[in-house]
Length: 340
Image 1 (cartoon, rainbow, N blue to C red):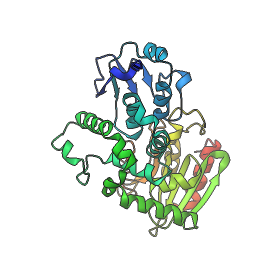
Image 2: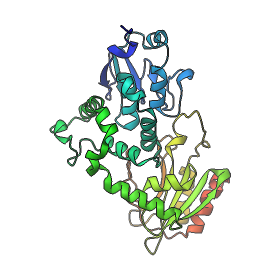
Image 3: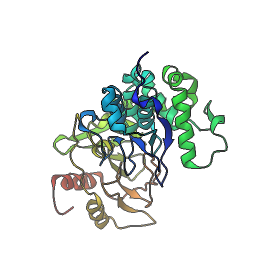
Image 4: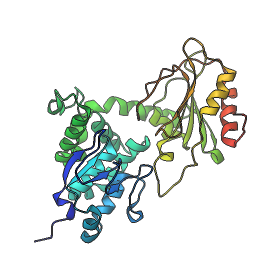
């Protein structure tokens, strides 16, 4: 009989705000101590297994010699994540059911990139990322399995458990969950197609890794990320008489990457202060900027508010600044002009 893999005895867990007292392997996210397989900033992943996505890191680990795996685990009996998302699912699946993950590696990596990098890869990858995100939603065929769970950590653990148990069915036949992704998929595909046909104006400063995408209506963030061709993106929405502005740094410049390296982030708060001098706050709206330590920091004119990772909920307001003024301020900031 083949020798059991060192990961065979691991059970699934989840690390809440207080962490996990048991010896554990953390994947994708990061607990304070213990072995870690992650692309998050500050991770403790050995260099020999590093990759752009945590799912890829976990797959590299599972292919390592058993002795290396055993030494790295150091007696851990739990594998966990500290947040819930698609790359976390792929990482946990690779550790707990490597035969399922390895047989679907290309799909898992495209799916993890769709979720973490917010870019279009394939229709199936988009579908699975949205299934993971909305697994417990009322429209989900699996919703009954999570009914009545109100604790966020418990919900995350139970969704991971369900996904690990049903991984092959979800990855091989996502169509039965179409209610969770079909409308949004159609929206993104249509926007990308129209953008490629000229419906969006795209201006790019390659040396600054910066692009301005101008549209006559709202734009899905995945459309912007896919078409901009840069990691710094300003969206100018001209759907009203006065423009609305929202800038974001893509997550690629937050994660620790191996195969490509976006330019280092700039602190955008000084730029927001410069724009606020040009357009002082009015009617509850102002120029705002997140610190560069946020996974997806934004600069926007609108109602000041916090925003959870991956969510786009801030209320933008029409600005009185002309687009050429705002774009010039961004270009100057990235070019190193101390005035902004």
